Image (cartoon, rainbow, N blue to C red; front, side, top):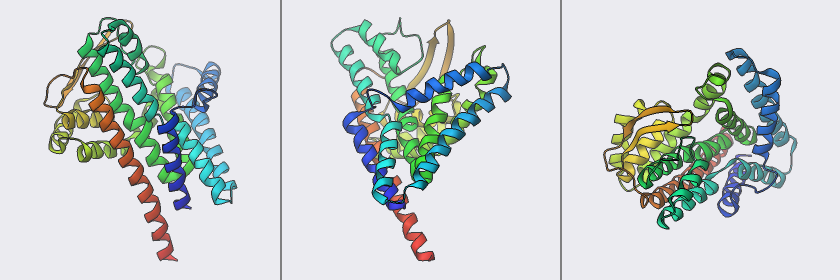
Length: 313
């Protein structure tokens, strides 16, 4: 079973690299519409209502994934299901395309287009960002989302199959929808944010180790992780951003301005210079290596688990 799971993960990863996210009828978008509709019915300004919202949506979606996988006896059918779901939940290729598009606009000198394009990657106010600040936004987003949209899915897919793939992606989607520090969601979105932090914890550490092992400066990555990650407001994003910064010889962090004039002073991550547009391709190359490393580790874990089970029998 684990060998078929490994093959399904590999095929789904390959599909994401070739095609990116499905252009139409994306299941994650459909889930988002369902989540929004349920929110309209359940919303109250308290944590219990938010926890119920998360429990219903993540529980139902991951339960369906578990039943679907278990109901298939044919190994080829299981491989196809795992591959399809993996393709649907991964976002590495689309993340890279967005970063490449911003880089191309900056290289062409079209700052306004770059400011608009980068909004697909970050939630901050981009209307006054210069080229280097746009580059920082892209580097930070690629680092964080390589963990969230690639490594975490492979970790949970290897660990729990289709149910794990679905559970992580639905929790991550809910966090993006309601896990915000604002008047409406401070309490209602608490459960979604905490669940996403919990499910993302092993992936962030795995992504940090892979960035160190596969990046140009392993020692710098580990030093930045050790020194800086704990100062980030996110227990997971801090690990990945610090590791990428150290591996690439950059320094991330600084002032982020969000819509509504909310400002955050983010701790500095890394020992190097500030990012510039030429660092965007360096970041996406490292993100690709981290993704391949995560896939190989997930496949190896699946195969080794099969071997361990055979020895016990």
